[in-house]
Amino acid sequence: MNWPRVFADLILVLHTAFIAFVLVGLILTWLGIFLRWRWVRGFSFRAAHMAAIAYVVVQAFFGIVCPLTIWENQLRVRAGQTAYDDRGFIHHWLHNLIFFDAPSWVFTLCYTVFGLLVLGTLIVAPPRWPRFLSTDAKGDARHGEAASI
Image (cartoon, rainbow, N blue to C red; front, top):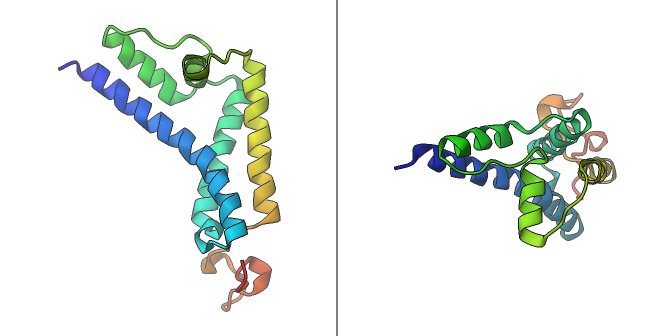
């Protein structure tokens, strides 16, 4: 068995799941706000979602290649496969899936706009704060604990 290829494929699945979490997470958050799904106001989910897109935006601004892309590339080379070029994972798969090609600044702009959408969603529809972060024992409405969503 070609173990480097197996591990590279596992990283590909993990990377895809991360991207799906970021993209689908925002869509489900908006949908959940309108449909009054309580779970979309959960602090842990919203904090993890904001952290995920913030990580991507920071990487893009500083020209940092995602560690998952680096590890997958290294494993693909060990497995005798072709690694992604310098433009990275998302560019590679977008180009292969929908023939979309753009300079890196376009991707940075897209990541930034998406990150601002996530941040805006946190402001417009804030998450419920966990009780341990509340200033009082009752977890009053000032901290997102209101009965209505």
